Image (tube, rainbow, N blue to C red; front, side, top):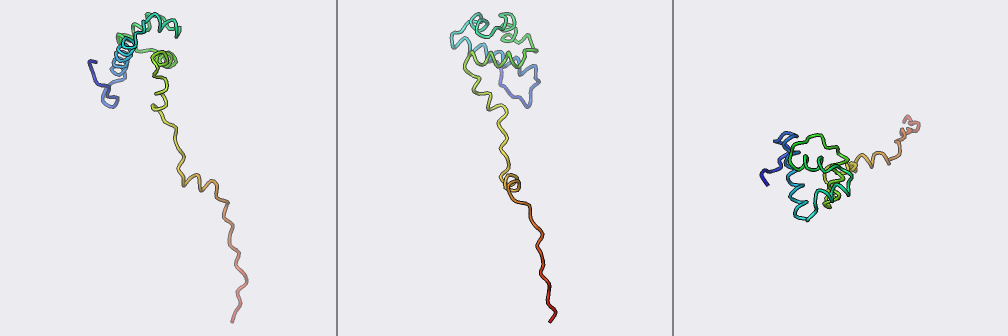
Length: 110
């Protein structure tokens, strides 16, 4: 790998190039050909080749997810944007009944 993926300090274009390189390395390590990826995803071999070589920056998210499925990384998508858990205090307040105004009895004058 020729670079570290550092999303906070790199441009989106550079991140795409690095993801393409990583994808290619993983695909090759798994002994999957570009033709097999193309057949499984319906994505053209030229699009796959351009992604892996860092010469395309308009790969759709749907295509990227399809590519990840082929190499077994689609399950990692959950980590990209985790589900937001509701704050327990907010949940408690939503479940709490509305407070009723306290009634004050008549005060006796002594």
